[in-house]
Image 1 (tube, rainbow, N blue to C red):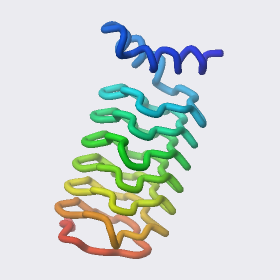
Image 2 (image 1 turned 120 degrees about the horizontal axis):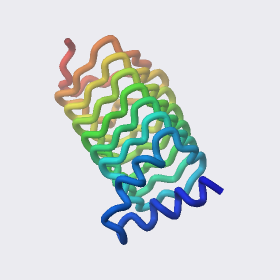
Image 3 (image 1 turned 135 degrees about the horizontal axis):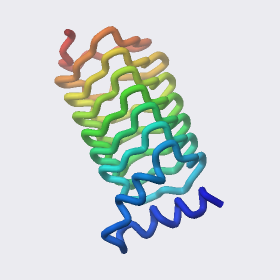
Image 4 (image 1 turned 30 degrees about the horizontal axis):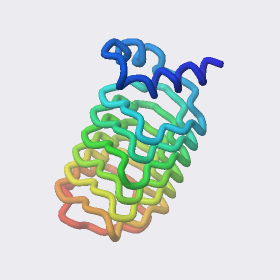
Length: 164
C-alpha cells in the first residue's frame, strides 16, 4: 500500500509545486523494488538508503539526486536516464544496465558496478575512488578526466583518466 502511494506521489510531482518536500520525506529508505519509474522527475531528491533493485528508470531525471547507499542492483537505466552530477557513493549498481547513460561529474566512490553493462557510458569527470568495476568492459566508455583511486578493474581501457 505504501509503495502504491509513493508511486502516485512521484507521478504527480509535476502537478504540485509542494510535492517535492513531501516526496523527499517519503523517498529516504523507500522500498521501490521493481518499480516502474520511467520518465519520473526525481531531480534533486534524497533517496539515501532506498531499494530500487530491478526498477525501470528509463528516461527518469536523476540529476543532482542523492543516491548514497541505494540498492540499484539489476536496475534498468539504459539511455535517456539523466544521472549527471548525482551522488552515487556506495551505491550497488551490480548487474545494472547503464548503456548510453551520462554519468558525467557523478560521485561513484565506493560504488559496486561489478557486472554492470556500461557500453557507451559517459564517465567523464566522475570520481571512482574505491569503485568495484570487476567484470565490466570499459573499452567503449569515456573516462576522460575521471578520478580513479584504488578502483578494481577486470578489463581496463584508459582513455585519459587521471590517477591520484
